[in-house]
Image 1 (cartoon, helix red, strand yellow):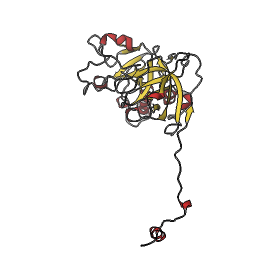
Image 2 (cartoon, one colour):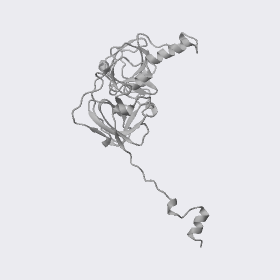
Image 3 (spheres, helix red, strand yellow):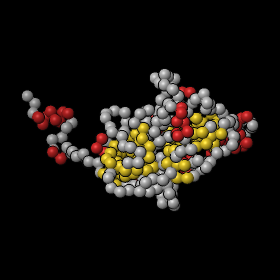
Image 4 (cartoon, one colour):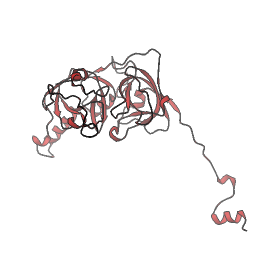
Length: 298
C-alpha cells in the first residue's frame, strides 16, 4: 500500500501545513452617511456595488407598495427650502425593497432610518441610485423630532448634470408651462410625454436634413425639454390590468398632443426605462374625478 507521502507526491501536493491558507470572511461594515454623500456628484454613486452597508436617515416623500415599483423615496430632513447645502449631489434616494417577502411600508411624511447596500438599479430602474435594505428590520421609523422636507420650487432641469443633482428629490415645477408632446405610451403604461414651453417636440428631420448641425440642434433642444409624467406604477393596462380604468383619462378630460399641461402638485424627479420622469408620490388611483388632486390639469 503506498504511503500517504507517495500519494501526495503523485498528486503534486505538498504536506507542509504552511502550504494551506484560509482567509476568514470579513463582515460588511456599516457606514453612516447622508443621502447626498451616498448619491455623490457623478452620474453613479461611488459606493454602488460596495460590500459595505450604508446607514442614513430621511423623510419619506413617496411610497409605492403596489404597482410594481416596490419601494419608496426618502429625502434628507429640512431640505428643499433655502440654499442648497449639497450642490451637485441629490438629497433624495429610492429605497428598493423588492417584490418578495412581507414588508410594512412607511407612510409619506415618516422619518425613517435605512441600512442597506447601494446599487445603480437594474431592469427598468437601471442607473437609478438605490438603497437596498437587507431585511424588514433594516427600515425603522425614527420617533425623534425632525424638520420636514419642502418641495424645491424650480423649473425642470435642462441638463443631465442638473437632473442628477436632484434625482429622487421632491420638486414643485408648477410655475413652468408644459405641453403634451406624446401620448403613445398613455394607453398602455399611463405615461404622458411632456415638453417644457409652449410647443410639442418635433422630429429633427421634419425641419432639417439628417446629420446636419440644424438637425443636431433640434435633437439637443428635445433632450433639454422632454420629460415624462408617470403614474407611480409599472402596470401594463393592455395586459394583466386590461380591465382596470386608466389613470388620467376621462371623457371630460381627454389628452391630446399640443394641449397645455399645468402641474399642480409636487412630484418626484425619477429615472426609469432610460427616461427622466416626474413621478406622482403614490400609485395614481383610477378615479378620474380626482385627477386635479394628483398633479395635472389639461
